[in-house]
Image 1 (cartoon, rainbow, N blue to C red):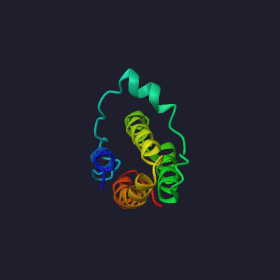
Image 2: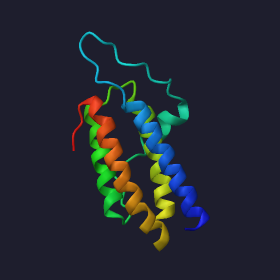
Image 3: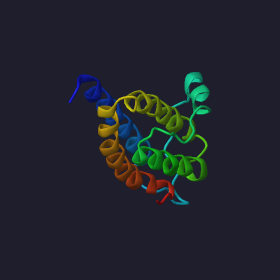
Length: 130
């Protein structure tokens, strides 16, 4: 495995950790207040608009991106949405870079499959299912 692929996988796993940390808590009930999200920075708010379903040439990643974005857009509270979109935008940039090589594409297929499983469980806290 090349060092750039290792770096990409490390960045991807950090993204998963952020996703799980932001969405992995217990589902809020009417008697609970949702956890406070970290304040969105200007950079995060600006990058959130650039997140769109990706076309990485890796079906597993394209599928994950579509499902995750649909969940964020339809279920995640407004106060948390910019943070998750900013994180996803960073992942998207790293994936596009990795998808530019055959080795990167091969690594992304496995990483995106793993991320989808982890995110699916974490995003159930927001009522998302896929």
